[in-house]
Length: 477
RNA sequence: CGGGGUGUAGCGCAGUCGGCUAGCGCGCUGCGUUUGGGACGCAGAGGUCGGCGGUUCAAGUCCGCCCACCCCGACCA
Image 1 (tube, rainbow, N blue to C red):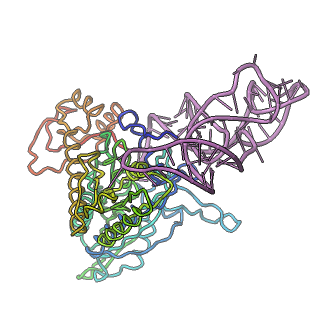
Image 2: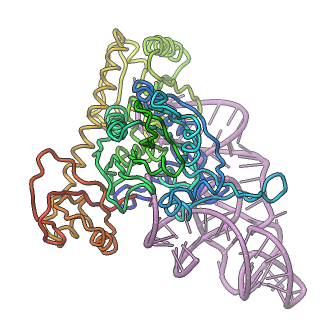
Image 3: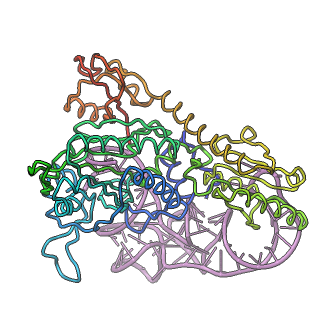
């Protein structure tokens, strides 16, 4: 195998595949389109879970688990839902050696089964709101797959809530979108733009879909988390009703929202460089790797003593001491860079003498990112360094994104932008057929409507009509 | 599902006109020397050549069928 990765410039897609495989985040499974998430990748997911879960709990949500198998008929109860999902369902027709009376689908998402249960559990306005989340795997039979970004099976969380009023449900939808955006920025250093999806891009069965959109290193967009206002569509289809204060029978208002292992793909493609991964410090499985440097046995014992002292000080961080004897320090440097560890700490005889350690930050390669920290208060200085890395990664990704978004004045400039410059934003008269035509002609899709404060009025870049709406368009994953 | 590509050791590949014991690099195991940016030497282990069938004295190599995976398109978190 080649020592070097393909560069992002020459082949971004191949760079991505190689990084995922070589950094041991995931591997191809024996079944087409399925992946094995390896321990290093799964630890990132666990850290994502932890960060999101505490945010969900802090906003009143609780976790539960609903079954993997859903009666096929459930999928048909909501007209749009079945239309959207039926092409990608995996269906179980046999069980225990016998053909089933009714086939079961492997959940592609859980609105239908959770709706069925909510109908059973909700009687009164006193039962509301119901705020349940589940961490689960789902299956969608996709044509074309790519590790983390689109696999037949993936892992996610799906929140499902039921409310007494429309307003409350809309607020919930927006609250969770906000949590995703905050999480993306503050934990993953991934700057995202939250906004509303167009009619043709929304979730099958939703009234409105919102998403957080992130720009990848090749300027393509990635929908990185979604939040749906479902109105009363599922309440009506599944008979989720309650008696209000006036003894009137009413349908609930429901929402659902999800973020998946796809987000790991967002982290990879937002931050990575030609050396490999660059992991955001707050989600990295290993925040600091310590590489001891020595020649003789005497040096080794001195160095290892200092390594232990440093490790004790850094107990509150996730650290790894690379004690491998069979590879050289130089090899280790490259290895941990590929794996994206935010801080590398070298401790050698010179450092022991000076009572300090040498640190290199992954976000700034080479000499520029190297410095020496005294042993005293090492925990504090490393903490500050990790924060500085996070801030730099976020700033850099934001700067990259903002310098690749351009105003589309007319269709010619639009085509130019989405072909090779990045995202286009512009006045948009919101015509479904025009949107389809643009997708056909340029491969760019309407990502979200712009969510700007004072929008005013302008001329649609495509139709020339006057409009109050603005929208982002981009090629996407 | 359409187009393209690839299946030979764990990984990446070579294998000429069908011919003798199927090779190379990386990785792996053991020993020794090394170690502050991808170390080196010596000795080893490791193969139903994707599968099935056919042609032939002889098939990794030729023919047919099948399977799998990857890449590019139509669908999608």
